Length: 181
Image (cartoon, rainbow, N blue to C red; front, top):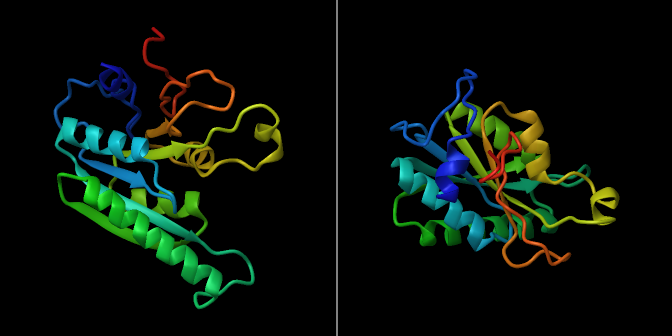
């Protein structure tokens, strides 16, 4: 029910509105995987893909900071964590998953991958940044992604209770929350 409500609010690239009843509305779902994948994010991406019989792509991006090259020990550790995260996402799936690893700025690389692979929906984790943390920490990858791509981004809250004790609903890139009619 929540999933149907969320999916009915998607915005495809051509500006038309998809509804959950449209067969094949989402043909390719991109799971944005960070170095510590959240089971809730993986589960949501796989549920959406199953609901629409969609292909699943899992992408992890190794951040490349200035002054760091591909052979730096920091990059090697990030790469190993990213590959492990992709393997965990693949193991959780009951369908084949196309796994990809990229290097660069995460939101930018996810957007480029989505564009080049005709992705219809990106599913990404939303960190629990409440209170003062929202102002002291930079934008999350998911927030940057929502602002930079023209396709729907499904932001899945971090698993467990948020720090402020209130539950947070799933939110689509257009700000819609299930049940807000």
